[in-house]
Length: 187
Image 1 (tube, helix red, strand yellow):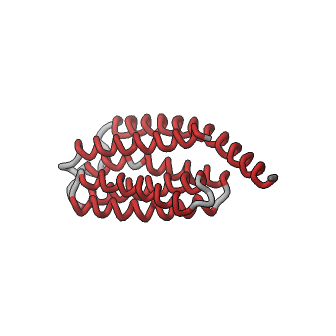
Image 2: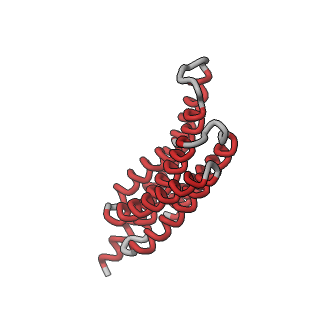
Image 3: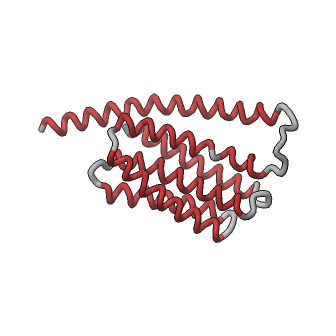
């Protein structure tokens, strides 16, 4: 159970670190609305992903899971937003708050095997957000060389393998949760 949680939070931590690095690299190209959009995207997706996971882990304690998910997401969205502007930080903060709240409620309401599916979907969407930095920083919309397809394709393949490997940890996590719930109901 612990390994899957570690996998998800490690992935979100790497996402946050890489987003901060990319925000510094692409700051000049991503001024204004693009920076706001990225901070909202990161805050919301980290909130949804961590909220769903924490809502399942702390099943029955919606207050705790909501508070933790909102804290994680607000800090993430605000941090990335501050890399661009104050208004982007506010947008990231509010999107993170909303994502953490919604994710925790969702994690509380659905069974663990469905939680695994949703966490994997939102983790994929969250990590795919790293492609936004490259896409939004381009001035032209045309493809100039094969590397415009090869590099993202290779990164997507690596990301897919990573997420599939992490999903295997998730199946063990669901089995552990279901065993724990079965023992809890027998007493």
